[in-house]
Image 1 (spheres, rainbow, N blue to C red):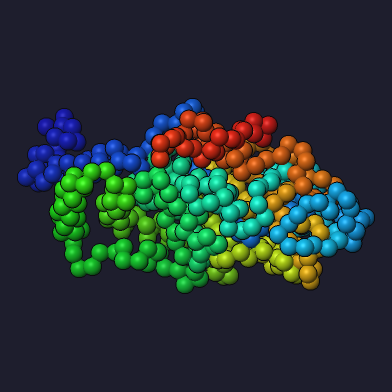
Image 2 (cartoon, rainbow, N blue to C red):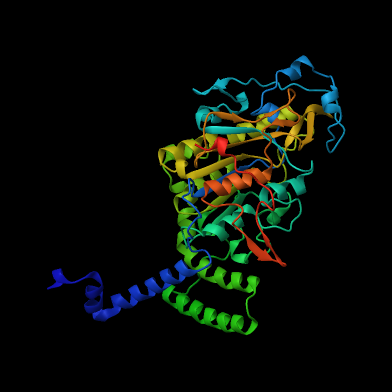
Length: 464
């Protein structure tokens, strides 16, 4: 008789019907999550990528020392040609200063990549290096806002919030937008803020230090002496009270987000410690990211990023250190050597791990800072901020690899060929995720807003 039963009938009859009660609760939770603000949404057209991992080199790495070789700097060392004399930067600079680093050709494509990124260079045929980035101002704060939200002031939602708003997330038990940084970068949490979008779309920051413990990844997340069933009853009562409070006051973004956060926190109690337990990875995987012995926070972040996108998280931002470590106004060569040594192996490990798991083709990986640095010297072997031209690279998620797109002038100062603004980068990112950047809008203060404002062009030439 049992062999002819459906699973639902069997749960109803066996154990005095308690099984179906548990199933009903589970289905109710699943249905509620599926209908919530973070529910997965249909894109405008078929997407090439499902996730974004942004390797944010805060402070602004030098393009002429990493991904944009300029041999003319050596020829004209110490000079200040007329072509750069009129390009104002934040501080006064001196003559041209060549890079001490070699740029061997890598991969079948022959893409020239600095010796600083020797391990990352093994994936040259996966990289599209945009050598013609430019932005609006040579200051950290507004340029970080521009790179994150498409505006130089803290008045617009971050691109991660826009992606959650437009697409939702694939895992209702984890935040859809996670930010990993030991401490805070310049601008702090404003970099991943939701602004006028509902609060549920804000990024979730995790302070990833070397003493990081998965069970304590988010403070006060784990329940105390209450059983799971008792906590569920307590939360249900609290949510009914919150719903009544909400009904009396009407739609309020902050209140909606707070109510949703209680439910997310309940679900995260089990999901988060498991997802953030990078030590559960085999030794050989840990070694890929250079974390098994070094306890490198950046390597830990890269490994966790792979674990998170593997579990359906939509956006993961990794900030390289707190503050602005790549801001090398002095000792540029030593600083770049140090930071590349820390970041090179983890980045290569991330690309290798994503590829072997079949995740690279559906994950857009981005590397870069808020601007670049001057090819002219500053102070003691330093380089000043340079918003006129700098480099970023993209990989995976529908990107054409082994490609150098656009160009700066012969000295690497100003983008002159196929210039790319952050609005264009954002439009391309949204396109790869299946979103028309002109149609992803939110009405606020009497008009429709979008990530790319009234600009942005999709870079079809870099798409596979």
